[in-house]
Image 1 (cartoon, rainbow, N blue to C red):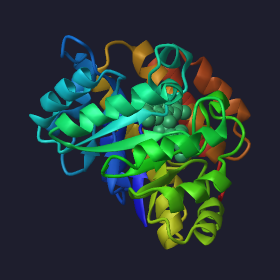
Image 2: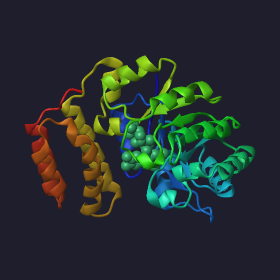
Image 3: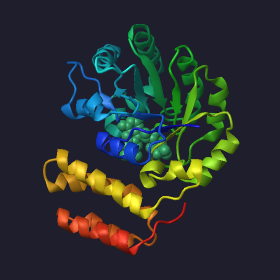
Image 4: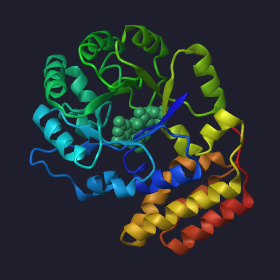
Length: 313
Ligand SMILES: Cc1cc2nc3c(=O)[nH]c(=O)nc-3n(C[C@H](O)[C@H](O)[C@H](O)COP(=O)(O)O)c2cc1C
């Protein structure tokens, strides 16, 4: 099985990505959180830093663009290519209101003719390979049948499918029936993404879909960074390793972020996903959330690691 690390804005930037890669490895491709392609061909320094080769040594990264403007996509991809990248991922999945209202991300899926024209343009003029990360549609699951006819016109590196619609956000469950149809209808290689949180989820998915060779995982890896070693080797995550992994991320954020508040904001976002890994963690979770100084945060994290055990998943 090929494993991809899903892009997650605010969470899987290069600090987390490098720590993950050094401690757990086993990821075939990482995808950058989305970078908005703008009309003036400039990138935010935060986005640019995230994909700089010196910040991503020894791992395979695919930068992701968010736009519905073909010229902006082409110009941004040319600039990204100067860093040595040969694949760009297009975000057709983001469900957030501010993105969708501009007909970008999964909002673009509702504009089928415009999407087709956009893809025609970028596949004709782009100088890199293109992969697409998509949902099934904006409002209805069966929009996918029209979308796949559009996607099939273009030779993409791969089609990554998160089988929800925009309206679902992250609620409900992935629509595996339509995903099954997608597998047989797609002329492009397909990667599955969605709700693989445990060894059991993996076992069930691979039993139901033995032909899928590539899985993208997001929240499942944030919640349990040791999930892939558990899937592939039956090795349960050790608390000491998780602590070292945490400390590395925490120290690295302190090197690049200004002020305790920013560091703590990042760490708390991570704990939102990771805290359920610990048994009976409500009290500790509250302490971590309330911490306003590094000293209080460190004390809360130390007592969590000292007093609580990791649940087996
Ligand atoms: C906080 C958060 C940020 C995300 N940021 C991005 C993003 O920048 N680009 C993208 O394509 N998907 C983004 N996603 C979606 C994930 O990549 C993934 O498709 C989704 O979480 C489903 O996979 P999972 O069930 O394995 O987590 C984000 C999801 C979350 C929860």
